Length: 517
Image: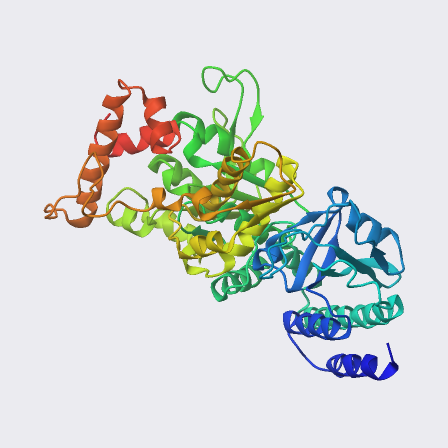
């Protein structure tokens, strides 16, 4: 390769070094220039994060690749590339599985990568990540000069160094270096808050904004959107990140144990209290307490919690001694607590103390193509779990994921990918090198709401709302549904709870509110 084509490809990148560009755009230009210099079917820039490689930009690969997290120890080609400071070119007939098998966007029938080459990126003399190139045609890289890839890798290292220094300077200006480092992890590395949609970016920005404060945050959103991950990200973005994050699912405990879990108890406080025990507040002292399903707290507990939040003082059950705690509270619920306040089921003063900063987590159906990135993350997890070389989505399966409404959000997607991978495995008497999930494997039409022509069995929505309006109609529907489920299971509350997808304690509490117990 002559010097002129090399300079033609590299000069725009040199110019970009002095420009203030978003990281995604900077890395996209980097890969485009590399593909013009070194013709290939796909290219990727991956960052090394502990024992994982995280794709930051891809060109020519399936969109779900950006959501995947590659464990280096499970991919021998990545191990070899990282262990060699010089560029590496694999033989076309290499038997080593390629991480991108089945992921290259191509109209060709073949799915396996035949030619592969790559180079580690060194920043401050340490491995920062990888540049990789792949081709489906055997021998396509044989005539390419490794020196050209080495030159390009050096400029790529300069590019990522500039990107990180620009970010570092911006963070210093805000005096948030440590907090923003953890925020960067929460945006898609350690905490798997994966996404690129505008709705997801707004959520990350709010996490960055309120995370650095001590304000009480009420995280709201539908079931399965990832409220616990958001709570973890808020803690990691705070000044308390090096202190404990203690969690309690308020719906998973009977009312009689909630106070003990929160405030602790002394010996003899109640039957079974054989010793003294610290509660979640004391365990979280100096750090953060996360109360999940906070809408399920009994009114009596709400009153005691309010006192602790206002004064920072608590008493263990059975004790008169005051304990002072310094705790930041983060709570989460999928219920409309303002409606619960109006209905008299929730204390107004406690609700306002919880919702100092309301933070809404968007449902998956509002996040566009984020569903493919999240699918990629779960596909890579299941690929490893099932011992496959590659697990991918067909184009029809991708379309099915994008058009589905996702009532169960990210949790539903996670379970769907795991279930569909097992079903697809069952279609093959022998384990395939590349397993493709088809739209039929996803079977999403079964989860869609029934059409008016084929109404679902069981309780029906009334044509006219009762005098109490929508809330009373919903309560009436829940009564019918729970009663029918209990009758089906011969009044076994545990079996009914499993079918309804609720914790037994949560179902019991709901039944009491509806007058069924």
